[in-house]
Image (cartoon, rainbow, N blue to C red):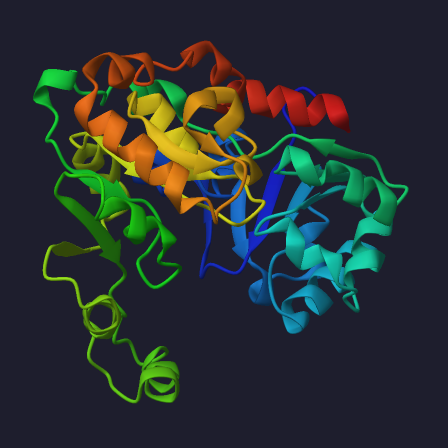
Length: 336
C-alpha cells in the first residue's frame, strides 16, 4: 500500500480530514497524529457507520475506552469488508488489559495488527491473541518540537510537575524538596450543555475552575503555583522555558512527557515503566514510582550541579527520529 486511505477511530468528538484541521498538524502527539501521518480522516466511534469504515484501506481503532465504546468498536471491526486492514491501537495504560474485558479479545483476534505503545507490555499482547502484535507507538512531531528548544541560559530556574495535579502527588513531594520554585497544571472544565450534567454529578458545581480549586484544597501548599493547563498551541512554547521536569509515572503508556522533554532538551526525572526513560534519560530513570528519596536526590543535584544538569540536558535526538510522522507511517504499513 503506497498511499492508503486511513481512518482513525476514537472518542474525541467530530469527524474531519487532516486537511480540515491544519492548525493541529505541527504539534499533534495524541492518537490523532496518525491522521496527519497518513493525511487521513478521524471519526468519533459513536458517529461511525459500517459503510463509512468500508471506504478505507486501513482503520486504526483506539481500544482504550468503556464497554459501550468497545462494543461499537467490535461491531465495526468484525463487520468490516475483507479489504479493510484493521489496526488495534493500545492507547492508555497496559495494566488495564490485565483484566478480562468482554469485547477486547474479539477485537484483537479480528484485527490485522495490534499496535502496542509500551515496549514492556508487548509479551502480554502476544499472549492474549495470535494476531501480530508489534511495539510501534504513535507518531511524534520531532522536528517541529525541536525547533522550540531554548538555550539553557534562557530557561527559568523552575520545576514542572509533569502530570495533571489531581492524577497523583508523588511528583509534588519531590518537587517541593528540589530547592527551586515549582508549578503544576490542572484542566479547566468546559461548561457546555453536554458537560454540565457530568460536572454536577462529579463535583456538585458548574464552576469551570473546580479542578484547580480542588488541587489547592488537596495540596495545601502555598509555594505550589497552580496554572491552568495549556492549549496544544501554547504547551511546548511555555514549557520549553522550564529547567527540569518530574514525571514519576506509574503507568505503562506511550509516556509523551518523556518524549516532550527529550525533544526540548529538558532533563526529566521519570520511571522505567515509561519505556522511553531508560533509553533517553538513563541517569534520571527510577526503578519505580515509589522511590521518592532517590528522586529528591536527583532533583537537588539537577538544581545544584551544573555539570550533571548539562550531562542530562542533551539526550540523543537521533533516538527520536524513528517516531517522526513519515517514519511511523512506513513502519505501520510494513507491519501489515
